[in-house]
Length: 452
Image (tube, rainbow, N blue to C red; front, side):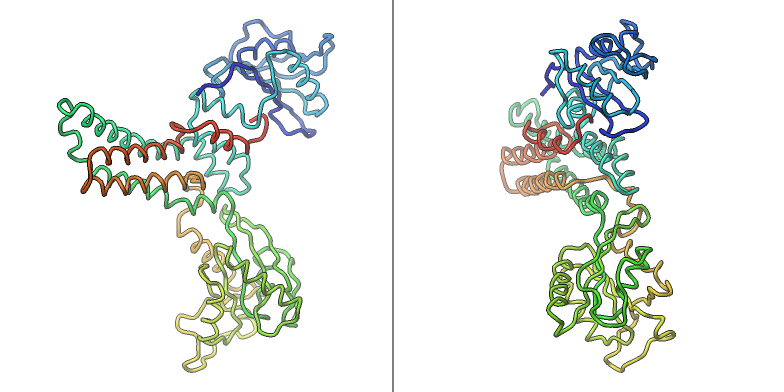
């Protein structure tokens, strides 16, 4: 696949007033079009050199003064000739410059993500790096920024390459034995162990999908439990402001409240939910139903128990979360300071849940640490290879094909073994971009902004 021969143009900065606005042109006519807008620039400008230039309209009247930069193919982002005009950030001015560039019949407006798509098609970046560009633009937490930057620098590409290269070599060896049995005799001798090792590597990458989603989308954590357990006060303390109403009357929270925070670089959406109890009022019952729906959708449920909760009661509240992981804490520890009350066989088992107080802040920092540990399991969010759901599906198919190949190496023919290895290679190529359809590229680059 190669990019078309049209020269494309777009604004590379947001369509809002700012200090600087950038017009980007890429393609065979980029330099000629750029010099038409900035005629004072030399006919053969020095690549990667910034020229102070006057930008003019069709009549030669000066519209603005700014910088002109020329990137000569193939040493540019897209692999083509690229010109960037850096003007003052007036939206009206930039639209005039854009319209001026489009007067040339060889030029058309760039599609969303087309500059990055051309970079991929011209071999400047692989598909993982191309997707990391969009991830970096969309990043809304420090962890997402750092993970996307790691992807842009090739962290994920290196790991995919480390799997794809030996997989391709194995497939070549198997095909060689099938097509040239005398010349390639013995090349398949270690096929079984090689397939096993490759399957383990694919599964290891696949295991990071959950972390990749947490970094991209942020984690979702819900506070839940019985009424009047101190959830809303704790929610306000964790958020850092009074977002939820707090009152001694049970059932104050009637609907789920949410707030976005960032803990150790990881974006976290916190939910304060309606307290669970029997025989609530009609409106409160709707809130409780919403709580149960939310518990099924979050990454972690923090069960806030009132002091003196029995073992049976705690188990009952834990079951409300279903399959969602639960972290239990005892709330309102400021109300009953000191050692917890014992209630014989009905008392909470030892060790008891950590004690927290949204009112005084006791135990809150420890709770934050516990939440991050349960979500992340140690390490730092920025260390993740940013594996997307699309990558997850491709890695799943890669691992499944290698699993079938592993079985075929023991009980089936060499043709079947080679075929399954070929399917694994094709699925993995959807991540790196070595085997990808135009339809998939269209889908991927549609999420990019115009000008990127």
